[in-house]
Length: 175
Image (tube, rainbow, N blue to C red):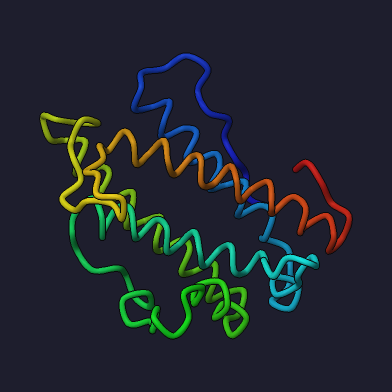
């Protein structure tokens, strides 16, 4: 089992935001770590969500916000060549074709790249106030602070889904 570290109870803003993001990343990884590839494909009807799809989706989310939006660079592979027009939910749907090892490696690679980008951004004088190079779909150039808070929000939402899916697989909850 992976271990997660609780976010700091009293720290500066950067450490607090990173602590919560790291915590939620670890929660998702724990929900998936001891399952088989087949179990990662299991759905909890009527939803089509799977834990494998969630891993791949959140790898995409990491790449979208840090690489594509913040730096205005291409998405990481395999997202950069996916046919999004043919399947808007390609990340969720294509995960059924991936093994557990492939999904976890992709997820981990996305986090490593996000952390690299974040470390570099935090060395700049603007710090958390640095604005994204690209506007969001709604036309806003958001700050690095906003991106971190949004990722915590995104992970928290999906970790709630992960709890329900995991419980439906083997009854485990609250770990």
